[in-house]
Length: 117
Image (cartoon, rainbow, N blue to C red; front, top):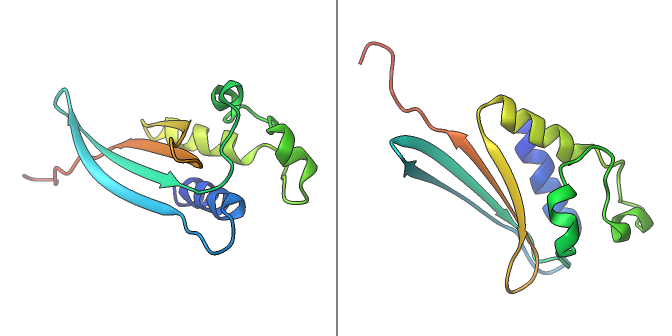
């Protein structure tokens, strides 16, 4: 999970303009008696075309602008991230922030029970 979250943060840093920052938050939610940790990572970059949002986590998919950049990568980082999150019982979604930038939310089980309790 460390590598998965680090990949999303690294992407956020890559696409956020200089002299701006990224926002990372963690909160716990209770959904239908299911405790979940919600990690939210937001950059202040250009965002992603709406039609590309549902494809970001597919292997080898890259947004057209990323293909033309030196830092575009191969298009497998977010696919690996999605798989790791899913294998840990979680989910990952991406959306554009209203004020600009991309928001990636990772939801994971947050079982706080302790053995013997």
